[in-house]
Amino acid sequence: MEDIERYAAVRLGLGTLYGAITRLEVRGWIRAAQTQRRRQPYTLTPSGRAHLSAQLSAQNQVVKTGLGRLKHASDASRSSSPGCIRPIGEAHMVRSSIS
Image 1 (cartoon, rainbow, N blue to C red):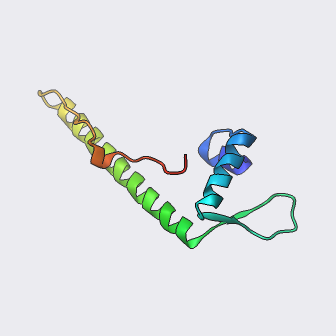
Image 2 (cartoon, rainbow, N blue to C red):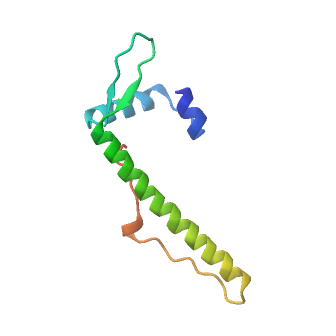
Image 3 (cartoon, one colour):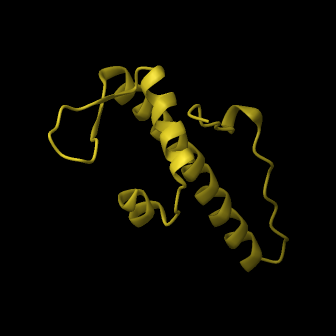
C-alpha cells in the first residue's frame, strides 16, 4: 500500500486494494508469489504483462494527443486567431479494464 501511495500519490483503503488484487487474479493478470514474509508479493503473468503493455500504449496515445492539442492551442493563442481544441472522439477514449 505504501508503494501505491508513493508513486500514485493516493491512499487506497484495504477493501479497494484487496478488491483490485482479487479482480487482477481472477483475470489471470497477476499471481501470488511464494514467500515466507508477512506481506504477500504478486507477480505479473504473461497475459498480465501483455494487457498492461496494451493499456500503457493506449494511455501513451492519449498523452501524445493531449500534448499535441495543448501545443496547438498555445501556438494559436500567440497568433491573432483564437485557439480551438477539438473534442476527443471515441476512438481515443481509454477505459481502464481493471475497475
